[in-house]
Image 1 (tube, protein in one colour):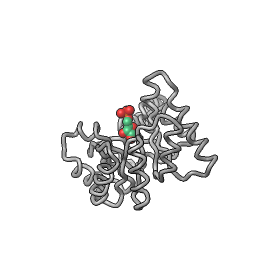
Image 2 (cartoon, helix red, strand yellow):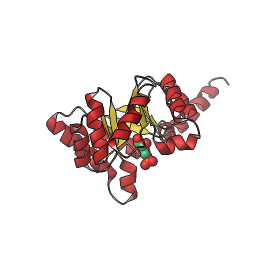
Image 3 (tube, protein in one colour):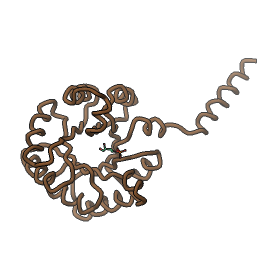
Image 4 (cartoon, protein in one colour):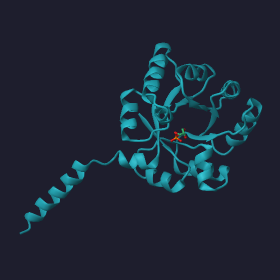
Length: 214
Ligand code: E4P
């Protein structure tokens, strides 16, 4: 499973990239707003840190505006992927952009029929939001399983990004479901490296090692 980092904070991206396990980055308007910086500048800086797909989201609600924004954003770097919302206008924009060879990540996907429509429109990626489904009392991970099953049925090449990942369990479950990618907040990436028994093990090894010097 590929690991994308879900943040617009370049310091987090730098630290995660140094681990050597980051394959791409996703941002969204909320994450960009948190940084209080110019959108295009942040995206450019991210492309200089990670050599992989970097999702930048459009904010227009009409297909025409989305395409216009996309055509500007792709000028930033060849790795820029255009994130469009899962609406009828978003699907229209995805069809147009994919025909031009521009990679699209259809975001805010909450059902398998939405994912299927995005794939049919030529999206390179679909982003089902696991955590936000859990928030309303549903099993977000079941959506990943369902989409993987459907895409396998038809040999669909669109890659599934398990998004809205909130904890280590989500990450493990996304991998178990065979998700192509998980986009993960920095904190969850770091948490996923830890285990209390690892810490205890190191402590005991070092203590025993010290004992050899007496
Ligand atoms: C996906 O690309 C989104 O940026 C993200 O995963 C949303 O996560 P949230 O529900 O924690 O805001």
